[in-house]
Image (tube, one colour):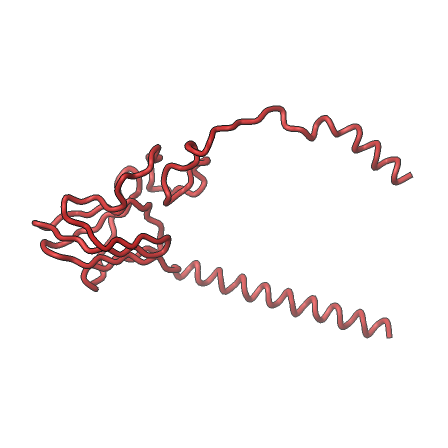
Length: 169
């Protein structure tokens, strides 16, 4: 009876299990900005009002000379030489956890532009710029609570298995 019901339910619902249509937008639709997603803005922060629709040509925007660029997902490092104090734009969307250092000194990151990109003030001359992405305190708390919850679940499962073995004996 169970097999007949299962087979009947599969046969009656099979036509509803297929998608009505497919949308193939191509890779260009999804590859616009390496710092975020373009699929439906689910990862865009609230302060980013304008979606990028093309890749940025330069990772660092400034009228000075940029050299020794290292651009990773959690660290950006470069040297810049400016003729006067300027704001340097890093074409990476700001998320809490980014910290900027100019010549080893902590400097504030501005991200109040329409795309939510990071900008820092850099003094005249040669500067060593480093931006590092690290966990915020709330991320660390929830990472820790996830580990504690997982360990508690393992202890509970281990105790459950031991009590079942003891009951069988």
